[in-house]
Length: 310
Image (cartoon, rainbow, N blue to C red; front, side):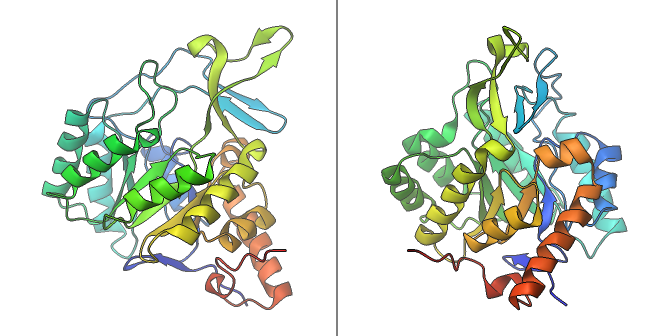
């Protein structure tokens, strides 16, 4: 029988699937539902230093091919998630979880990561360099000079496992330039991709979400080709020690298979999880295993990154 076990660095996971930050991760109740599902782990809601109410509602809308959102980082604050993660280290000592963070300024980012460094948290930290839905704040990862300086400063004091959540890149030269920056640092992983920023969905002559006059991040089925391209482009360019988490457009086991084929070591589920709930993990896991059984693959390493070209 095929197994979907995986690893990032020295951390092992029973299943390669997890939630995407922002979905089923706002509070303990939602995170516990993911813990008790077939998912291998979870990532917390992206936390800021202080709690945030986020953007005005409606700020999320399901569409036929995915979703649009402009959440604005609603979260319960750094301390809430850290306290919960430290509890889980006692109750689930054999499991590893991801702590997602974003600073509203460079100073905030360093304050957050220094708190993690000084804490007893022994999981994996994800720094979100790609939040597209905070009015007035650009995506850091599109400014590679700023990104390099930020990571240089971070790794001068941060010694725990750290990865970065990235927006989609759309130009081959940007893949080259971004990979050249990331390869300078001991990153545990990169996560490709966050939603495609600033899309617009219209129904009956009106936008469907309130913030930013309807502009928001596009997720779901729409973005799979972009996500796969980013996963594979970075798989071909990054040091092998930097693993890739594939995120975007995972509705079925086939979608997940393609993410792994492009080079992903783990796969996150966002829009589909929002629409179906945590039962989606078991369904998609079983679908992936069925594909692996049919093709004779025992582990995801048997086909990870082995995309064929014409």
